[in-house]
Image (cartoon, rainbow, N blue to C red):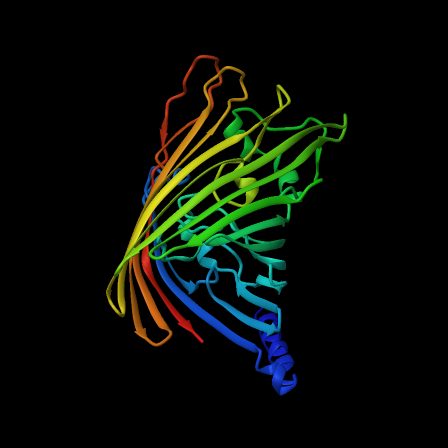
Length: 394
């Protein structure tokens, strides 16, 4: 896989150096290499498989944030190609992967983008210091890098975005709709008797607005995604609909920056948010059980000196889902987390972060199996992680 990355970089360099001089001046390359040293601790309550306080250290490339990119510009056209790696720290295999690859055409009155880049719903809510945020839920972010066609318009003091995006109803969900993962939420085997397939008819839709003022900014976004699951033996179908509405505010007061965000949504795991609610299927009453999510966070960053800052954030998430037993109590799962770190500039383009964070999984209450009976809540324990990242940009 490393050979593949070397080949991609070499090919980009060959293209750049063989262009005419006037064109080559419109191509820029950049990259960043990040290495992280972390300790992760699961307490005995969270580590139910072994029931002991487990602490593991990891020293590795942080592939969540390491990348090599090329930026092309030619009149009204701008193009970006950025490649990164997986990360053993976050459980992914080390391999070359596409982060961004898109072209955007400036028509004057609006800009049109075609390709893969961040959805507008990518709004990091926490002042994190680790790639992937250490497994946080919506306290961190919602959107992902996804193929899309997007238009941008200048509206008032800000910018309006409208996009059609790849629908998340894919083979991955088809293989899990009948699995035990959904039974955790529905309280009954989440199966469609004689197999299922997924039918997609519309892309995901997203609209967003952002604006910057003298010392504060605002970001608002709403998106919607739907597809059908079909019982192949009877041709009956049920729609799986997801949506999210969210907003983020930030303000600056000299060396102090403060920011906060909140979101609400349905079946957000089907939208790409890690660790969030999924749509389950009630195989007894043959109906979809939607998962509802709500979350918020607050954070701050203070520039102590030109080369040192301190940042911290706190957030909470709540997930609920109807029981497979009609009239019984719903599933409820809460979590919260906080993170803090120092950022230090060692030299030009060479930085490090030293931080500590806690994810409190809090209580989880399973969906009731008897009408009128509320199951006891179960403490899911805490996860802590602390460590250092080193970053060099070139």
